Length: 309
Image (cartoon, rainbow, N blue to C red; front, side):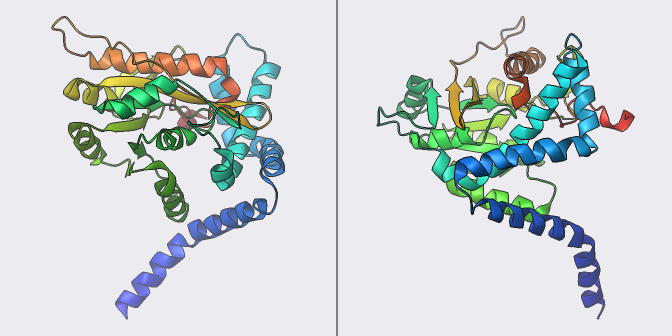
């Protein structure tokens, strides 16, 4: 009897998350009825309407004001609305990812997806060695490991599951079938990545997330905590580190870019400087965000501002 009561209490506590997940799945399934382009445009318009009505919009406005004090309020609000639209696009693109990603490395035909840095993909595939690819929450960053798989280059991807466990499982199942091996971000995730590098493979990480126990760095002129994991792994395995990003183009098209390996800073003893490397990653991400500010997820509390609002 006690076990039954315990299960009932747990179920009632999880019911709000279950309900939110079911509503989300229902809305996404409705979008499936439409062709990809109208569904993506609809999601864009819907989030431009819904987003400003949420509490996260205020956080987005503060983040933009701190990052771009030189821009007018109207300019920052336009970026915020466009950023909400890109979030809507991201959700819709999840549904149609198999159809959207039409890049064929063996074809000269141009489709929705173009890739810059093909020789780097091929070199990493044909000359196996430990390496790290990093990106940020910009554009449809989910396409990057899919692009690697298109070249026969599979990486172990570190990801942070959504807080909702029902949505998290759905997202994991979707990603696992298209992106190779996934490592949920938790206390033991660094060991899983280390094993992959030790075996001569590649790993992929997002580097623009808040990490309360991270190193003191600067991002858009403000102090932030940055996860030193990438720098520590690069130091331990002396491996190459490649920046990569996705850029949304007009007409629901995408450009995926992988850049040459970065030269990482070293200290006076010749060892990789973890703090300076963490700052270097921030500088790279900041340069990307400044180029396409509307494509970054400004509703993230990267600067730990939310508690002061």
